[in-house]
Length: 100
Image (tube, rainbow, N blue to C red; front, side):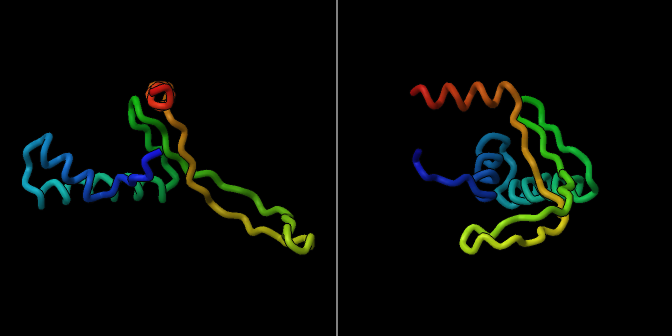
């Protein structure tokens, strides 16, 4: 792995190059899309992006956990977690990248 991280700035720069919007408009577009996605997830909706995957929020129940260092049982509070399921096309693309 290269260790490179794709950032918001990288996305807005790609929009700038590919679409031809100004850099400021590209950054605003990326921010708008990410805000819209996160707002939908906060409301408990799924976010499906064709050929990419599905983001969803799952409610996890309270349970008893164990401190691995001491072995004592500790209650874990209920919480909401974000999950991502990649599409079959995305899985195939990633698998192809591993073969190179």
